[in-house]
Image (cartoon, rainbow, N blue to C red; front, side, top):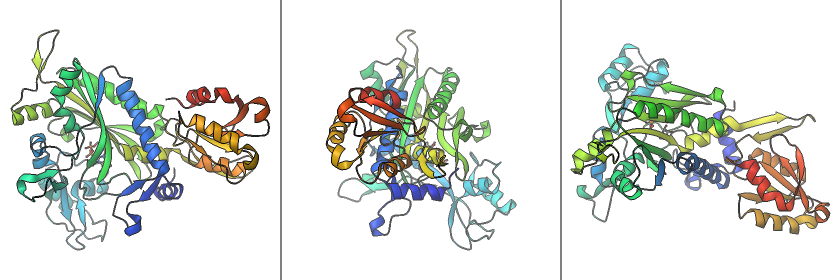
Length: 456
Ligand code: ATP
């Protein structure tokens, strides 16, 4: 597999991902998605919405605010408890997440669910070394709240203090009654949301793997208590199937079922789907059975009845919830790591290629006049027709071989060449990125051909 450095270089040189605020020396761990990266992100989100919401009869989509009433975060437990265990090296003053220090020291250990005292004792007993300076003494661990704070309005008063959301899920829970009432959905049903979240991570890094601003795709699936394990297993497999159907190699994926002692206090089952990133297997997607923790917390804190009345049985209950939550950027990194490749051709030449599912490819097709002077007009006509339906790109510079290579490298699935015969046969040559096979397709069939070849 490619190294992280190769991915960063590739992303920067092709226009997938640039360093954030580069012009002003950058802002640590922020990234801007360029012309190709923003299309890749859009396609990932579209593919998620398509399978998790549109084609799932149970589910609807919402788009809630990033800024919420602060009471939401008091109720959900984020104000009191959304923290990472922060420690500091006594010698070099570098700060670390204690749980990550422990897990890096011994990958067979999981510090999930440990108290800060337990973690500190482990650092001392096992003489864990500072990854920065190699010394073995750390300051006692304290809980560091990861929510970004800001103030709403012009007066910097405590009363105006609000938070940037650290997850999209709470926007769903607080709208549970609105959504259920207006859609008249019966349990089981799910609510999907895609949007930005913010966490003041202690140790961001590994390129776009862990950043302080990121995009999440979350679904809260409301079920009858007692059926949650069944639904948990259903969605766990659904998520895995979605990843594999989009081309991630099965060998690069694994489930990491959390042991009972490592579960959050509100969860009765949690699994992570882990992907083989360049530094090893790491969390891609968290899937948790969250019981009725969130709805109950909001019921208590707001005083509103959050229960659901089953119209068939007349039972009234607080639904349980299964939540698959994944980060768009982690998926971007996984698809790049999984797909970047260099092939040696029969001729002995090499070609860079991004093997990515055509539905995710930034461009479905490139429109290429064989000779600019002779074929540009017809090519532009075809380009203007196809760009009504697909993301396509027009390229007339350099020889055709170089243009093919350029498109292979950024994952463009089809290359459509307009040549000398086009005027006579009203057809074009279509080349496939992966097989390099070429077929002659009538211009009038291009739209349906691309649709068929790139569908998900
Ligand atoms: P981690 O243990 O890696 O900090 P988490 O278990 O806190 O992650 P969740 O709260 O379960 O993460 O978030 C769900 C998903 O959101 C994660 O699986 C990941 O894909 C994504 N995610 C979470 N934090 C970040 C981040 N700082 N940067 C990018 N993606 C993130």
